[in-house]
Length: 482
Image (cartoon, rainbow, N blue to C red):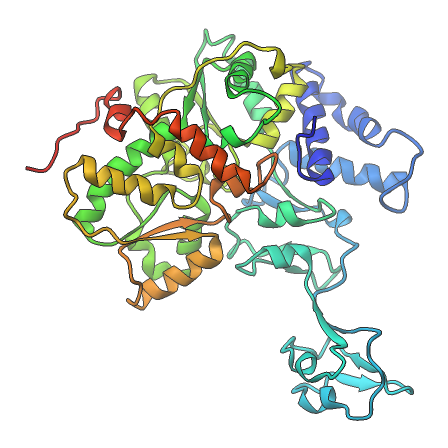
């Protein structure tokens, strides 16, 4: 059974699985001795120069699986020793250069960065080149091309670049929104999100089978498109086998958010969504004048967690989802009081296997908290659909709702730019940093076109519920406009 898109994901998973296994078996002190031997077991074809470098990189992966550099607030880090195979980004002259005597490339270069050898072949001085691309445009042989590192190409906000010292990738924390796009795209696994699975395991052990305190799992609706080798009910049973007291849908928090966000929109006239932590962080870092327009609502994760914490004081809450940025969100002052930790679907798979749980053998446990509209928050456009429905349920159909659903951070940037200049043809920006929405997050097991269809199918299983029906069990009012 295939569980991951890439071998890089599988390598990352194997390290996390072994860290989890050692933690469950109280052998955490042995991890640096045992795991490199398990992951790189003796002589065999190496990815890199030698077994020693392979094992050194595995040690760095273990370090990140244990929480990484505590002095670095970002949950995304670079393993420099693993980042040494990519050429530097920029324009390069290929073998297609015919050594012509026109030298158009030289004529248009504003920095005199192009020179020629004895055969008239062009060469670019990287120390002078400003990557303007003029030379590439005029070359009659298209012999000059632009190379972009996968991580830099993945990061649409230009938060990652090559270090001037060693050429390894470096992350600008003042720009980074922890979306994890670079993590998923790096072909060497050199960019990695920190893991907090040890904290989660300690939490589960410390609850003493939920007698000392109860530990709740909040699962993102994107879970339905993952773990395709088992049934959703078996996944939920597996989570409870790990030691969680209860499993609650984050989609119920989404119902709560859409219900209150719809009235906030009517009151204020213009809003940007607050559900995607990477999108919210992007506004703060790149469009500070738009911060005042961010919805006052917490994210669905934090909203339902707040309700649970108020209902069961002293409990612990772990979010499980597709998102690396959630690991940053749980550190925020207004969220950390409600959510104790966050892990990805990749890490959940590692926890299952680290504890020896085969979810395909388990009976199913029902998950029936949210409405259709809460569940489709997992894909782009879902929040806008939910707000439309919430307006109807509030009796506010006469409000002219003009949503702009942004699928990916590039579309978010364009919408925010227009809104900041008062030329956006809409009054609500649904911002999703990942293409496709949460189903495109860096922490999923598999990406695919079918994920949207699968999530919609999951939502339709709750079609009999309105948003009001879903949240009525929480004691939220459903008063309508006169």
